[in-house]
Image (cartoon, rainbow, N blue to C red; front, side, top):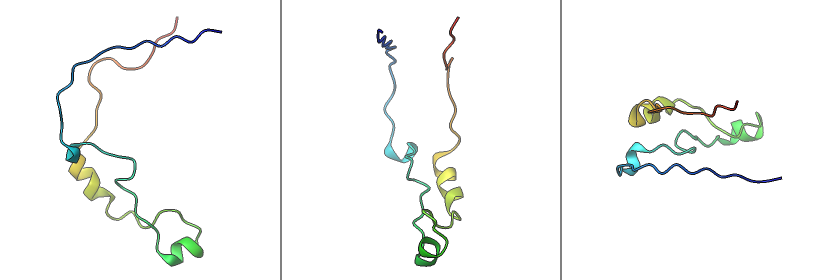
Length: 69
């Protein structure tokens, strides 16, 4: 077996940390009732729209994905 790694360099412009989303941006810790009685790992997601409004819509520029023939 062989491992092939293909790298495509792309010049990007710098951005601020406020424009970049992380996986924990919309995480809301559960309260005691949700955690103990309901077994939830995440609390009420009422403020998720605030995070989505802050980072805007994400989109891909250019071609993306892989094509195998």
